[in-house]
Amino acid sequence: MNKKQKEVAATDQVSTSQQNTQLAPVQDIPVEGSDLTMAELIALSDAKALSNAIPIASIVSSYVALDKIGDTFTGVFIGIKEQSYQDMETGEVKTGEVVSFLNEGKRYVNQGAQLVNAVKSFNVAVGTILRITLTDIKRRRTGAGNVKIYEVVVCASAKK
Image (cartoon, rainbow, N blue to C red; front, side, top):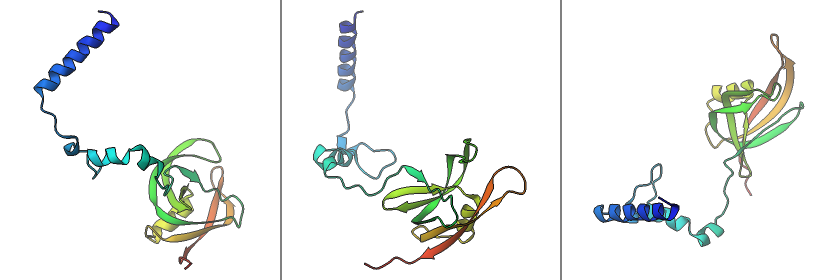
């Protein structure tokens, strides 16, 4: 069978299949993992709707590198997640818990064990504004590398 004959045969199979099956209206097709109907998703994908879409937040994360004593970062705490990350000292890809923040619509993470433990131990609520300051860097007693010590401060939202 040449290419054209295969296309015709495939089209015939689809036509026969469609005749034997009653299709549900597009609005009724469930969309896995969403509360939206297929019709609502199609409306969202309209070119005009997409061109007028307003960006809210990036879902791609950047690493918060607090490297020098006194370096500070302020963000809205959005949770602790298990995530793969590249160890900044060894370059090795590891999996562990990271603290996630939003700052000006962008997601930032930090996997520092001391920072993760501080946030976990105080049961910080999602939506809390935190200011993190690197206060000390100590050599590990065993193994290579350093331990970063952070000050974590809960902040109030400034009124405009």
